[in-house]
Length: 69
Image (cartoon, rainbow, N blue to C red; front, side, top):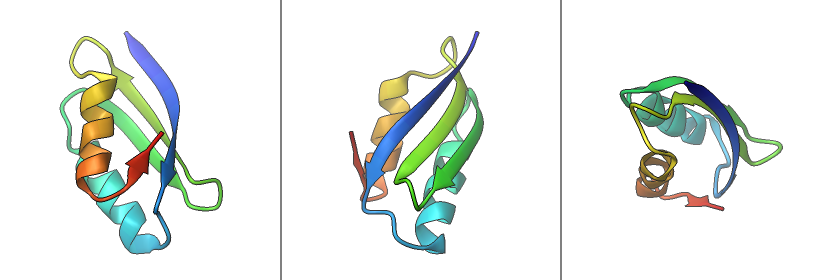
């Protein structure tokens, strides 16, 4: 089952940040789509709960050096 969630992410400031997050999260098995909104400091993620956990997605963003709330 697909789930959509919006995460509040601090520390994103430029296109490099967008590419780092969209690229790394987008490669995760079970992630259908990921969209960064720099102005709102949010990341929209659509994912399959049976294939990947929300914690794993947050951990991947955190590993890129950003703070996920």
